[in-house]
Length: 110
Length: 118
Image (cartoon, each protein chain N blue to C red):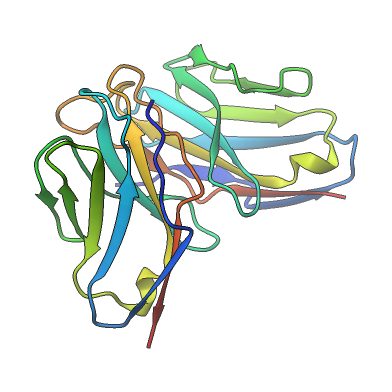
């Protein structure tokens, strides 16, 4: 499974868009990009995933570059409840495990 | 839909004692995972089950950790004897099947069991 690189911390004003970057330059063709987040004292929560195309759901949007070497998670209108550690993971298709790095601590301030 | 259930939520034990954590996955989920998360780090996979069989336990410290999923549903993770460095959150997760299919096959996590070894 490919490794991912994320900034250790970011902050964002409430109501503004939060754009969280992730580099996965060694990702293989059958690996999906997954995003999870973990709010303090809780288990990781699934946000979104994608392979090649950009994806959007009720929580966020995922933009994957054409060469698939990087992606951006977008929270369109961040709230205080979005303060969490966000993990970007390249998930292999065969065994399907999730290997977590240290993630990005996103702090949303009022 | 009920989520992944774990118990106990919190446990404090002395070193060299034993402890067991229980997990009940989402109904119908064949694949079950145990992760260990040390403070300030991301979760680390310990073991993966497919039904009642072990798919991968390469990261499980087998001298002190054991896990079972006898009937292919709920699972128990045991630590005996515990060390100070075992203080962590133990997360259970489940998915419909192993692997990543086109439909996603999302992995869902429980709230975790917090262990403090003193």
